[in-house]
Image 1 (spheres, rainbow, N blue to C red):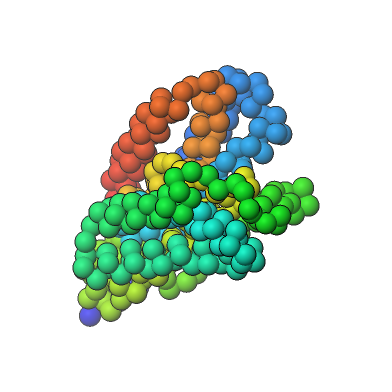
Image 2 (cartoon, rainbow, N blue to C red):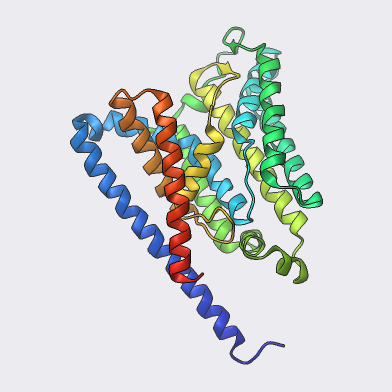
Length: 329
């Protein structure tokens, strides 16, 4: 039975949690500002409009998928299949379009294929309570394998219809369409996290899955729904990337599954579940994009960038754990 002070205590804890998220986002935003200042000093061309546009375009796919991955992480799970799913969808988009299907239908079928992978991930993880990293690594290989089979281990460039690239190359006024997609995903998942039952249940499952079971939350439905959304988002990103470059490469989005996790965790998402916001993820994605951009401008070899990203992920996890202990939420 709830004591008279129960509702007040719950509201108080919710206010503390929102305050903690806000404080963490503010801290990360401060880091972003410092990074921008340092980047502009190291590389004077960094603040050029063309370069800023390049950074935003580079992180657009990360933002699209990380908007959903933040919710996946909120449930206490991981999704390491998104890079493979994106590559698979991009190749299937080209295969269907080259076979004579209309571009809208080809894109729809390719995106739905990602939804099927996501649905499978969610059902297996939630039904059998198998660790999510094992399941999604397996489906990553399956999806990436389908991409290699569809593209015959190469790049599909010939036989594509003239409007194949429209989904990735169009503009809405002066704004490239991939940035519009990214903004749409940000707004949608901010709403879902804060205003829908699904978003609240994701937090609850990540905070304590046993309590969620006992309280009547259908863990299977929630986890399966969120993984399905992740598969759809990853496939959508793969289709947009393929359209943007007017080709389908089975090797696109290498390391993408790690980039989306880094963006979310940098933004304050708890890798163990129960905490994380889309707004924080956006700040994390900007930090990741700016850092990658500056390293590229400095001519740092890709392999060294992997080291930097790995160190960044470890630092973000340690920082989030320290912050959580400090505020006891």
